[in-house]
Image 1 (tube, rainbow, N blue to C red):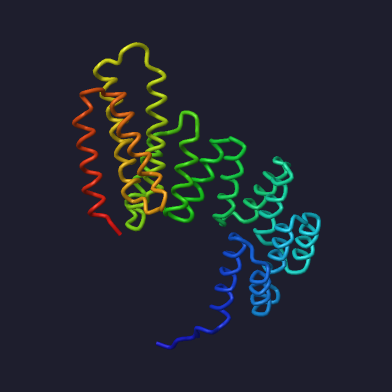
Image 2: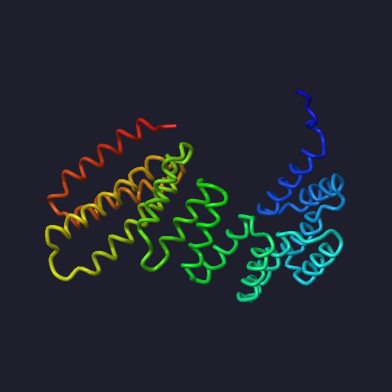
Length: 287
């Protein structure tokens, strides 16, 4: 077999330089390093459209919006269009509180670059901030579909789905199942915290709808929600490696207050069982 690509060839180094620059645009801006990465990609590929747009990001973070827009126009005239140009225009419109204008920039990006997952992410966040929860969930799901199930993308989608009034619980449970089946995220404290929070929202809503004392069927439904909430809170506490141990406190409060408030004396076996499991699993999952 004859190999035709070398590790130092432009066919490999240009995509790596592009990814490196794109990653830097979405992280905290360090001006010197940003210009270094822009120059590196520009030297490799003088006609690449991204470096000129990346310069506009530098101006955006300096709050020089007019100059950033001018730089975008010049870059597009010189080297062509890029999805980041439309996303940056949308971000600037958002900062200036021109929400409809921002939406149009993001939708234009989607029309021109339909295969770019990042456009759906921007639209999901945009609609979420405007409390258009249905649209936010739609684009979050499209984003997840294009990048594949993973920690951050799946968590974002769950967060947006559970904000929807009357959200689809089947979709949420499917998203939970997706994330828990990914080995590197199975022990994700944030996932379990979000799942516990979602269950708590459902539990509180159920309680508010109650009229009088719950019957046996209703009590069983409340028990099921409560058990699920405590379960996810327990795992969030177990995998909490932070110095503050915030999820440990949340779990303790839920276990003590909510369990007894809902179940009274009959909840004592559940309380003792869950506390015992917590300490056993903490010992098993120490890192």
